[in-house]
Image (cartoon, rainbow, N blue to C red):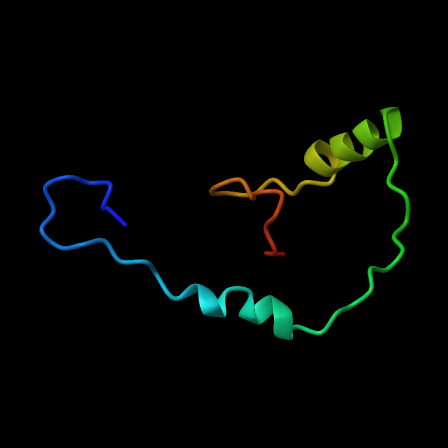
Length: 72
């Protein structure tokens, strides 16, 4: 295997052997997917988005909280 960057003295190394590829996924127990409630589509979903972003959001000092924030 040749190193993509020319001018380097040492040969490139591969990170880890491929014999261990997929080890964690293979030893994780299989869990069946659970049925979820159907999400609203179209106008109804836009209504939920609007309420989530503008109506129920708490206005405070500092930076605005992101949509994936777990802070209360």
